[in-house]
Amino acid sequence: MDLLMIEKRHTMQDLADEGAKLSLERTRLAKERTFAAWLRTALSSIAVGLAVVKLLPSIEPRWLLRFMGIIFVGAGSLIVIFAFQSYQITLRQLEQKGYKGLPTIYIYVLTTLFAIGALLGVVLILLD
Image 1: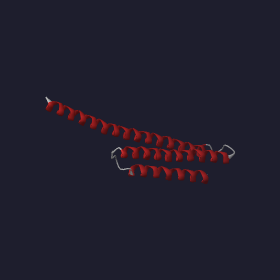
Image 2: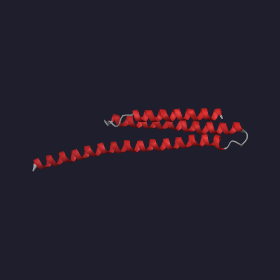
Image 3: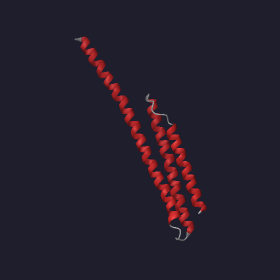
Image 4: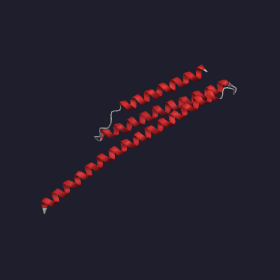
């Protein structure tokens, strides 16, 4: 009887450990989805900034359109930075609990590409 209780307790502990690992994985996946949503928001903001300048060329004063475009592109850039920082904070918290996820090089590359795109957006606006 004692052997059965020990085996049952061991199995329950294994299930609890597996559940904890899966919860960390769900947290990481949720954070990646949130990061992707923030990137979509940033991309939309950058697109609006460019659209204001490029699709409304006849509206005066022209400097106001450029200013609005730069504000939207700048907001998109800030959104990318904040999303990256938020993702990094959550990833560090998960690593402190022993979770080793995917390499973060993908997030670095994506964030860098968005930053370059936003910079090019500002250049396009200023050259208009």
